[in-house]
Length: 192
Image (cartoon, rainbow, N blue to C red; front, side, top):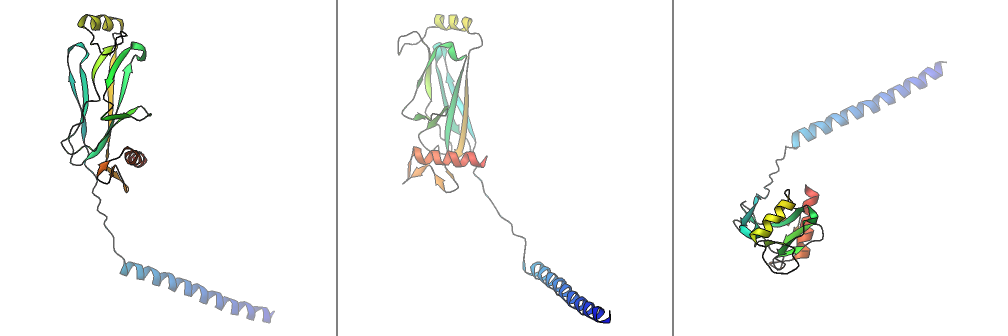
C-alpha cells in the first residue's frame, strides 16, 4: 500500500507541474498580446450613389423616362417597366441603341453614368396597339382606352450600382463593356 501512495504522490507532482506550466504559458501569452497589439481602425469609403427617374410626359402618350445621377460617384444603371394590366395592348418604342434588354426584366443603360449625368430616355412614346406601327394614338383613342382600363399604369423601377465592385469594372480599356457590367451587377447583388 505504501508503494502505491509513493507512485500516486509522484504522479501528483508531475500533474501539478504540468498544470503550473499551462497556467504560466497562458498568462504569458495573454500578457504578450495585451502589450504588443493595438486596436485597428479600418476606414472604408463607399460610393455615394443617388439616382432619380426623370420623366417627360405629354398628351397623346408622350412618356420619356430617363435616369439622372444626382450622387457623388459615377455608376451604372438599369430600369424595369411594368405595365398593368399586361393585356392592355400598349406598345413602347424602346431605345435599343442606348439600352439593352437583359432577359431578366431589366433594361441596362449602355454606358457609365457620370456625376450629374442623365441617360437617354428608355422609350419616348406609349402607343395603343392599333396594328399600324409608328402611329401616335389620338386623344379620342386614349380617352376610350382609359375608360376600358381605368386602372392602367406604367410603373418604372430603377437600380444603380457603382461602376466598379470588388475588382470588377464596367469599363474595359476605358470603354463601357456590357459583359463586364453584368459581372459588376452580379457582384453588386451579392453585396446587398
